[in-house]
Length: 154
Length: 211
Image (cartoon, rainbow over all chains, first blue to last red; front, top):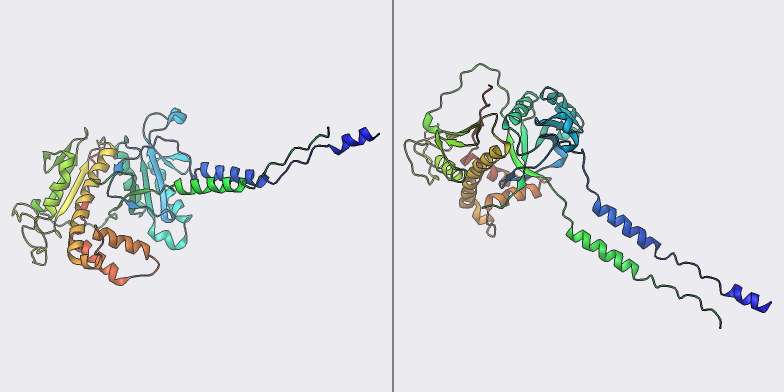
């Protein structure tokens, strides 16, 4: 009988849960670091050109327009450079409506200060960019920013 | 022999490890901010007023051909020489501005066959449809750089005393404006406008020919 009782006394100690919060925090940090915030997934190749006379972009008043060759995932759209706005390809004719929509979604007081940010692949024809600019002039969105990678000032 | 219970692992240092990791990533992370060239497009002009005639000498034509070759004033030029050529053109001061004043701050050659005054000097840029965007941006960058260098020079001549430590006075002024964007500083804005007025950016872009 006494032998039996002895066995009961030596039961496994409860697993400490003190370190559980730490593990959770570590996971939280990992995902915080690994997450890239991105508004629209790119459907085009997007290698930006270089420039050294750059200014900072104010994100709150910017509408982004992407242009370039469709990437490997969207090969069915062909080789010609295309314009992407938000998550879809649009044609030059649709651009004006998209810009108005983008301006409408913005903060009231910033609407008059809208800047259109061009994220255009460097292999794109400049003719497409000038078509876009022509549409922007029609939509009366006259401030543009050619977004570029910063290179060292010579 | 009595069975000993397993000793508890000390978890007290776990928090330290987590904080160490947190601080490491806090320090090494850079939040990417987009940067680029800010330019203004001309508004669409429907009025049928005859554009004023601009003398050829006040016009600096930059053309990028379909094979990405650069033509400046109808001659082939390397991209690395463009910045200096544009500065020489803008800073030339061979004559007077529309008000009849000659440019007393210009340091150019005062060549009668080049631009009269920075107020009158216009850079006209044109490209073919097939020009690559990369080349277009290179050229834009060089032309904007020419204006920035000249403005930097004038800002340093006029306002260096207010920014003794700054290497680039105009950049320092713009940064200060950016920092105080919620408290308006009229003196600073006036100074920035004054520097810009000395070398107004007259960079016009023609539409490429449709073919």
